[in-house]
Image (spheres, rainbow, N blue to C red):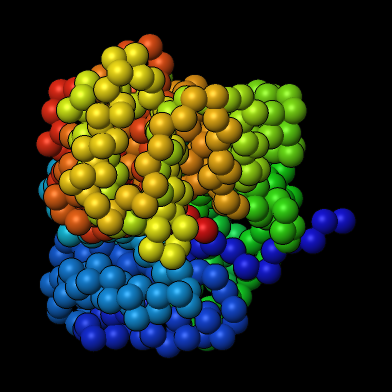
Length: 562
């Protein structure tokens, strides 16, 4: 039997960090829990904070405090900055993620309130949408007495659950665009029984069963994930949700997230493996986590080779999603798998095979990328072009392209390699049809003496090896690029003509941003570029908005997944 992981990439992680606030909820210090996670050699830790609620939605214990902003307004507003500081403090030691649990409080003022809270949750990795309170102001997960009061108001067990599902559906319809995950879908079982119609919802003709089936289908249609939450086990009512719900979610291809939903440092790390055993029982072999709202697929198995393949898959998902707007990012992509990745064909229903081609292709909204961790082979064909050895510093490549453009010479493909010793090498695929290449080389040698140590135009030459180990962007929309992915990559689609790419290179040089790897490709009159760069993200994004109409697409891709 395959061994399961001992660690999970949580979404509904540990509630903590309100120790400086009046709210006695998740009060342990963030640093204390991070230190515990590092001691356990965990690669990542996930924090989660509740958005503050309206004053009419309060637990009995909270009403007794007579404090208006519940769940810690001050802590909530300060959370993004605190997480950013912790990421800097613990850089290189652990990956720190955080999410927001957004409270549903109705479609009117509650909706506007929640939207405002999302804007305040800057840089959250994901948002969980949860229903804790009924419109009557009573909580589903409060005291037994509060639950019995709500049960009495609604008149029956079926009506109690029917109201909860109505609120879930209303939440998804109203702000399904704001959330990635549906929290603890069968939360009311904490204080009341599940009616027979819900226990047998798969076969029951009862209206409640039909409504719940509709809820699950809505979650599937909206491409939302389902929270598999161990808090119910802590509280003695079993994992949220029950197995029958999870099995139906698997049939609907609803992705699941896993989390312990703990509130104390002493419980951190408990039930990690149990959560994987629980989703495996329902037929899942993978789950999702999130970085910067983008889903990451995780294997349940402690299998190094499989984890590596998932890393490649996640890099590809991130790359494609960051080429798309926020609405398109929510759509689940289509996958094709080949070579050593072919085992994914069985895991991801609807995916297609690429035979022996050792790569993953990810497609949606008319865009595609192909990635692999196999080092590309050096082309055997002979090439014509400009070979360069030069200093590895900002502006050098821009200077080279600038001179070529001044002579009307278009660069069709390019490869760049940093030698990590202050020097770099490049090959630019060009032709000498207009006879101006020698003039361009003479000009560069005359004006940039000392920058270029060797600049030679060759015909029928052998292309040097420019590749290293890593995850590779093989293709973008079918155009070959073969770029080894770095932390920051710029990808563009642009008009393929002399001087167009120079706009981008000059913009980067103007802000002292160095290009550490470069690949170009083309399809008819459309040029493609992929550049690995070092520099400030805000500065780069600002530059990319100013390139002009000849750029059909220009995106900075930042990789956050591990």
